[in-house]
Length: 157
Image (cartoon, rainbow, N blue to C red; front, side, top):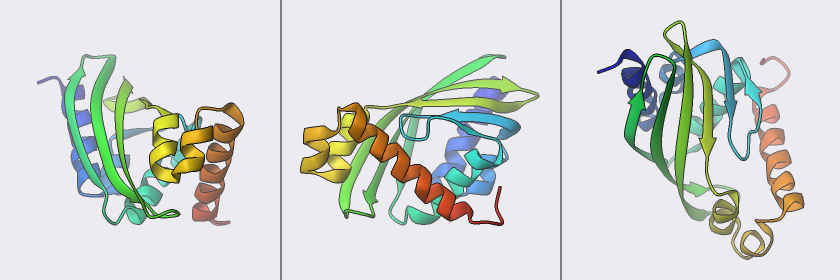
């Protein structure tokens, strides 16, 4: 098995255990993370997002599959199942991930998923009606970033 393939498996195995420190250990210090909600997180802020999600996801279940990597890039599929705490609604979010590597660590991590489908599950009728619209998606992003910044607090990176 390729070392980078094992690195991806280690990342998701730590995620399954809600071990944010184990996840962050797989990341290069100059990590760049993006997904449809958190579009541009770099360095410690990316790690803080995983800490926030692991700590807040009391019923979070993660399954991963289709892991592949070579010396430069990698990919995986993962499914997250959890209760979205602001609404109490159940979410199943299927996600495809792409990775880049540097110095034996993940330096680029891009998750892709259908934000409209997520909004419909997490937010109910407003998400179904408006989740595909740019202004609504921007509200979701702003709210998530505000939550992350609150989590970081004044003394965190």
